Image (cartoon, rainbow over all chains, first blue to last red; front, side):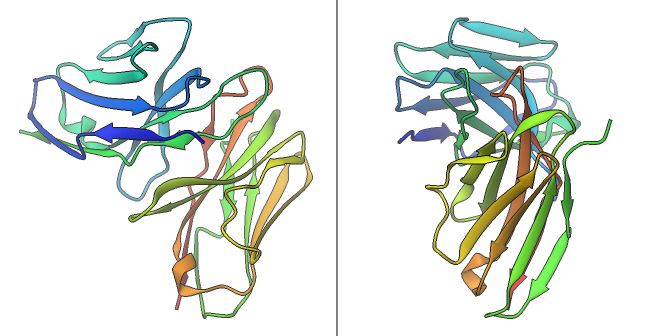
Length: 114
Length: 114
């Protein structure tokens, strides 16, 4: 089955600086890579995703890059703000024509220092 | 537009008791997923349904766990008998017909088994 590794487990950055979270996956058949943000006591919320036919996707201050050859993908947050503080999870799935369950990384606790 | 609805939000029960968690997916979504979140194991897929049919239940930890989806707008996850190690947050998620890979999570049920 799929295995997703996520690093670092904790990341502390100064407000206004950039944050990068990295994930690797094991199953070359995986084609869909979402990122979820989870605030304390809340549900995971989908913030951005990428499919294997593109190498990069951007949405305002967040971007995701994918390297299918190396089987790794990354989340980039620029100009970090206090409200970016949360736990971020990467995930992978087949993402083909039918539904498929997500395999999650263990999460990164992002702390934005004022 | 209402999101995924789960009930109860909190459940405290004694070991050996039966527990039933409930989920109403987003209207029009045809895939439904049950996940469990713990500090030790992170977010794990338990089972998922497509068009009310169970597709993959390989994540269900033991025979004590069962899930049903009698119609497109309702699903249950039952634990019988419950054990302290079942204590976790249980999330339900659903995905739309035209983007089966995008999963939207409910608020979760925090289960405590004493």
